[in-house]
Structures are given as C-alpha cells and as structure tokens.
Amino acid sequence: MSSIQSFEDLECWKAARELRLFVAQSIIPKFPIEEKYALTSQLRRSSRSIGDNIAEGYGRFHFQENIQFCRIGRGSLCESLNQVITANDENYIDSELVKEFRERFERTKSILNGYINYLTKAKNT
Image 1 (cartoon, rainbow, N blue to C red):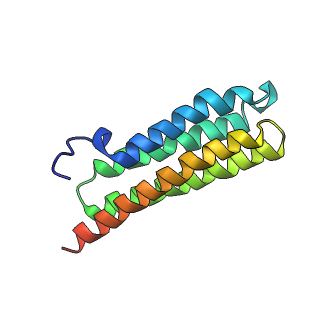
Image 2 (cartoon, rainbow, N blue to C red):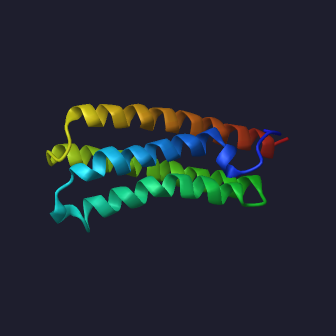
C-alpha cells in the first residue's frame, strides 16, 4: 500500500469506475425516456455511489471509518446489480448486458472485499 498516494490508485476504486462507466455508456442509454426519473436515476446514483464511498472512506483518518464507507459502497454495488436485474425483467436490456455487468460486478466486489480485509487486518495490527 506504500505506493498508494490517492484513492485513484486503489484497485477497488478503478474497478468501481469501470463499472460506473459501463453503466453510463452501455446500460442507461437503453432505458426508455419514461424511466428518466426512476430506474435511470436510481442506477446512475447507485453506480456512482460505489466509487464515491471508496473515495470518502480513503479520506477518513481511522481504519474503521474507511471500512464502513467501503461497506456502504459494497451495498451500493449490490443495489446496482438489483437495478440491472430489474431493467432486464422490464425488457429494457438483454441478458448479454446483464452478463457483462455481472462480470464487472463480481470483479469489483472481489477487489473491494480484499481491500476491506486488508483494512481490517491493518486496523488490528
């Protein structure tokens, strides 16, 4: 972690950014206009919240606060998956887009869980 100078250097933040960009560029444009203030807005906000919380946690002084913000980010990650499933259920996106999202979701979740584990161990030493 000594090479980490900013939240932008965190692999979990990079993965969250990639997921957010995928949502913004590949999923949201498929939604109908009537979802602009509903599902579109919810998915946009939850996918942004993942990286937002990782960044905010990084800026906190104590490990426990950082861990808590990362857990909130993980919750937003799961919320985003639920909204993508809803979009598929409503026939706004096809199963292939859901599959592509799930791959990014699993990668982001895995890296974020690793970072949370790292922070937990660092807190305890």
